[in-house]
Amino acid sequence: MFGTVAGGPENIPPPKGNYDEDTLCVEPVEIMRRQHFEYILDHRDLTVIEGIRTKKHSLIGCIDCHITPNDEGVYARYSQETHFCASCHQFAAVSIDCFQCHADRPEEAIRKAIGPDQRARRPAQELLETLQFSTAVFTK
Image: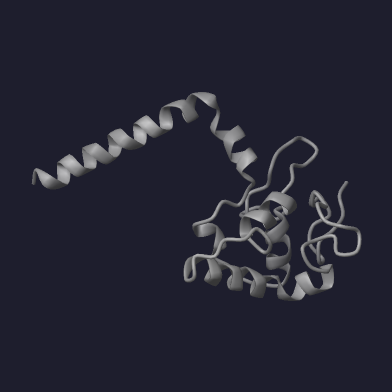
């Protein structure tokens, strides 16, 4: 059994804890609970508007650390209450749109879910679909 996150369900896997014991995160836990969205939005603006890419406060960093597999090795999706982000956002009745574009699981989980056969075919399939679309558009 795992711990609870801000009053959420009890079966949320704990984060990896990649940082020191004082902060347990890129910032102290109490600050992150209240202000993480400000860090994420500021990081987004630095990256998208100014072209400055850093790892600290990046959404990918949050996902890589906080979204961990359960006892069966399964990673929760944002639509599930056991997803680290969803557990607090549902509890606080907060709606976010991060995962409409961004992955809700670490890259390793997505690669594992895709499987080796699909990974090998995917670039070729995407190229073929793009060429077919381009041909269809320009021949009309």
